[in-house]
Length: 202
Image (cartoon, rainbow, N blue to C red; front, top):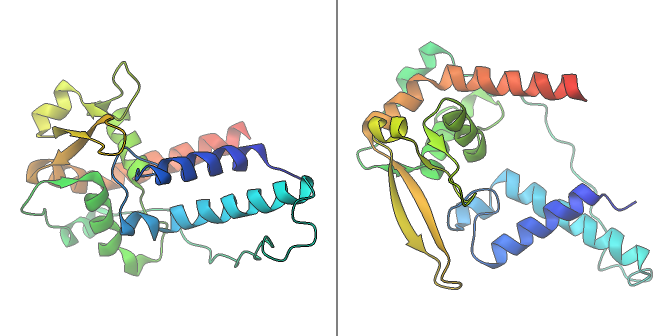
């Protein structure tokens, strides 16, 4: 059966990546993003959707090229959790970092904990929820609020060469990085609460 949610997600991922765009954030595509577990899972779903659709349309009934590879069972990981004692492991980077670099540094630092990785989308949601980022009227990528600007978050305007589309990237200098590090326990609590609310609504 064709899963409409997987179909929608597959289209979004492939379409954005075909334009050299990050499939889940308003940032440029990079090898690091392509190799991330989140993107690899989305691409596996896209392959499954194409295979199922092909079979429905009788396009690949005799073909072995479109077989869906069995998914490897995933190891069960704990939720993202950072305690106050863990924060001392994190040191702000000298240069201002975008959210992708910042999240990668956090995940690499806590790789030993074998927990779910923090994502840029999740951290962005927390920053928006706490009033440091906002979605502008045009509905595109988040930009700092007055509160976020006071924290030191700065935004740079970029233009995609392929399409001429304007987008913005936020950069977090040392004070903003330290603020995020200090509040990672709150981020973890926020994500846990979101997960519980989704379970309650299911």
